[in-house]
Image (cartoon, rainbow, N blue to C red; front, side, top):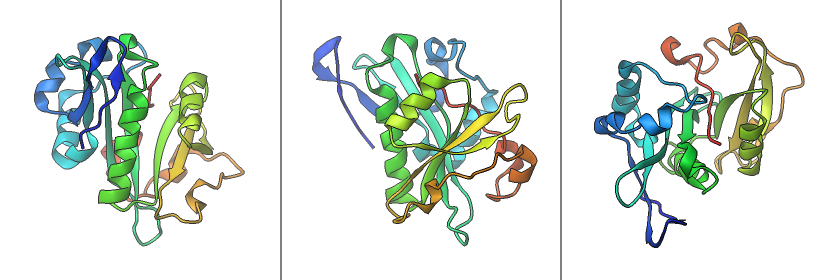
Amino acid sequence: LNCSFTHARWPSTMTSTHRFTALDLLKFNTINLDPLTETYNIAYYFKYLAYWPEYFLVQKTPDGVNMGYVMGKVEGSKKRDLWHGHVTAVTVGPSFRRLGVASNLMDNLETITSNIHHGYFVDLFVRVSNKVAIGMYERMGYVIYRRILDYYGDEDGYDMRKAMPRDKNKTSMIPLKEPVHPNSMIGEYDNDPIDYRAAETQAI
């Protein structure tokens, strides 16, 4: 799961992607102090480390500084072709934005979904007002699948999706014509109720 790209500050070296570890929780303040980034309780992060370690990745500089991270999971119903990867959070530190970090992290998550879990698609949720993030996801190949009314309590959310190779006809990306209410989503993926209302992804 190593993936690298050149950073402008280190022209002769490469940054790298690693699995997030418990020790990284002590080093991500420069990322999570950003006002657009959701910070959860420690048990929430440990749950993802325990159940979906392959989906919890961090991008680091050559000297070990955390640039950004992605956390996700695999969920859904295999019987209904809803088995998929979900992006719970993806965020990049302010000083490392617009360098391809978010794209690199998302590419890794999609590869894991397709090659390891054989998922049909990857999905994520985002505030309808977050135009920068929406535009970034659209450039990555995601489409707005549906609008979820009052998903964030004070604002609607978009469910965005990108089909994986297993979904050859890309039926998972065909947008719904009408918005849905969060209550109608309960149980549709056989989710753990604790993780039902996922965080907004904030990779800018």
